[in-house]
Image (cartoon, rainbow, N blue to C red; front, side, top):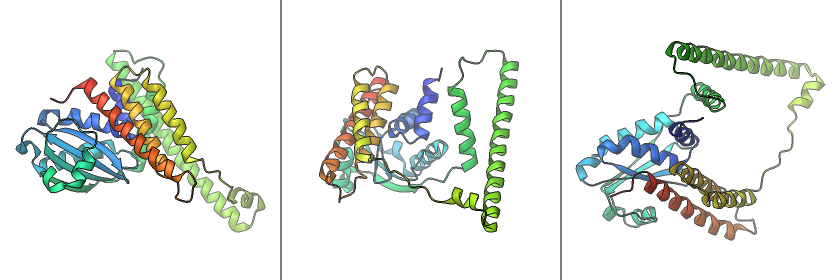
Length: 277
């Protein structure tokens, strides 16, 4: 069975904004800083709030947030804008508020770019996560057995990774050599195959329907975080519908609606864990 915190961390690495917020709030709790966030146009807009200005010292907050986010390395998120202000009551439209009057709303803001994670380190980590999720029962408490099991598991997956990379290298080398010799069988392999692009509008609708159904049976903060991630993904997909599509206006409207649903669901998750005073 997957530990709830491991599940949240995995969601954060996959790019779930709701999961990222939860981890940031837990790690920044001792500093008195609370966060909210929304992904807009590829930029993670992050709002940091605290009761006193000294709790929001710019260099300290920025470095702390950077370290947490780079340790998570969330997929498809590199650009982050960190906004700060004295704590206020919950506002669903906080981003619109600070965008309209940043000089009145904020103490400061700063843009940062996250360092790219090491590709092979991330690949090995993903393999380990999938392996831990598929375990039929938790490891026994015996420390010697547990240590040996982990060591052997690590060696197995490291060997699998190295072997897979080596196989890919020789496969690419062989295909390139065969192609240079004019072997027709490899020319067929290298021919571009037509790809079918899924309809983002239809896929977004299915995700939204799934999020709505899941909301009827959600019982925990983790459940609401998963639903928030679905709403956000549906919003992002709707936003990709091109202007020449006859459903463009409808898609733009639904993108905004789904984004608001994601924010509202994130608030439900936050309230279930530790309501903001």
